[in-house]
Length: 334
Image (cartoon, rainbow, N blue to C red):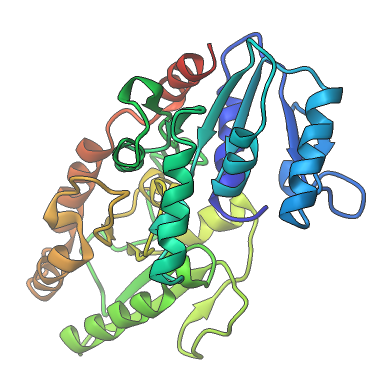
């Protein structure tokens, strides 16, 4: 109920083709729908997911009481629950992993193999609507027929802005403000972010590298990292606009909405090379792009580097907009 999945679901509803009425089945909080669903035009059903057995039982009850035309499961566990049930003839079942569980690196090899085996066993029981080309490749690799898979592109949480950012037009003026957006947890890999901060500080000793983590987590961050805590969409946007550079350090993803939000804000970006970002040009990766960033700052050419980076990201991301998402949703649900 936190992170990118509900954000993606909100955009699906906002960009839905005409003629659909949405019902969200998810755990209630204190007897009412979770706050993340506020101000959505949708009905709500309380789905008890406290244990796998209760989740399956609750879903069977919802299936009996609420006739549906399309069932769209979001993330791995709901995807498994939905695909193991028999649905009435004519009900279209769609599954968006939002990152397959077997991509996780915070669990052992055995558990990852189990997750992969479950996905393979259920591969033909739904339309797999991946949120990026990398995720679709993974779906096909575990046995989903290509004809039963497609991409519903994730889109940014807000429209691309033309407003100027709070950065120097001349380049870096003694300070480099870098940031990452997400939960301070293994999936977003804050340790990798900290290594990037250390690398930049060593490479640019005359520059004050000021890191900000936009979000929060269960473990404490080091004192020299500014952590904002969870913010509203307006607050997140303001924090992004105050940066000079966005670093996306996640160890696994479906397709990161945080990265799309940073791009929509106008920031240059370096991202970790992971399967979700299939065929990412080397210059846009943290691994290959950091040296050119450092050289640009040292030579006073950061504005030129920033413009080149922004142009490459625009070409890589392509038309990830409301219209593209609406077309893909129509294909997935029809």
